[in-house]
Amino acid sequence: MREREVHKVPLQIEPIRFQDYGINIFNSVLTKSALKKTIKKRLITINGFPAATASFISGGEAIVLYEFEESLNKRRFELTLEVVYEDDFLAVINKPPGILVSGNKLKTIIHALPFNLKKSTQPDMLASPKPAHRLDFPTSGLLLVAKSSKSLVALGNMFEKKRFLKYIMPLLLAQ
Image (cartoon, rainbow, N blue to C red):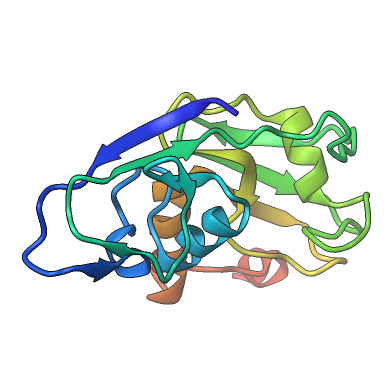
């Protein structure tokens, strides 16, 4: 495993649980859920020992986040997608009808994304791009895809606060 980021803990007034302290100390671990997943994958160590959510932090500890090494057997679905827009943070793709966005099957948009999108160079880049929302199996349309942790959180917040307008094309054509 290769080190991705290192954090030196400043002296704390009183000990704090790592699950509370560890959020936002790394660029790619921005939520409690992401922290727990990273700990479960054993990608964080505290003073050389695997981190646990119940570990207590008091100051002086060296916390290391390791690079997630993707499996060589990672499932990929070689489907050419229309990429409408792409930068280092996100992409917009045109999802064709009849394909699942995610799920247990190989033929999903998630498995086709690495084949179609460039890897992000951001420090909080995701190991694999993630759709910020879903479209139904028979539905075609634009799909927003996050390429970094910060963009995934920002897009999720925007969807939660209903900052996006969704239209069904036949309604637009009728106007």
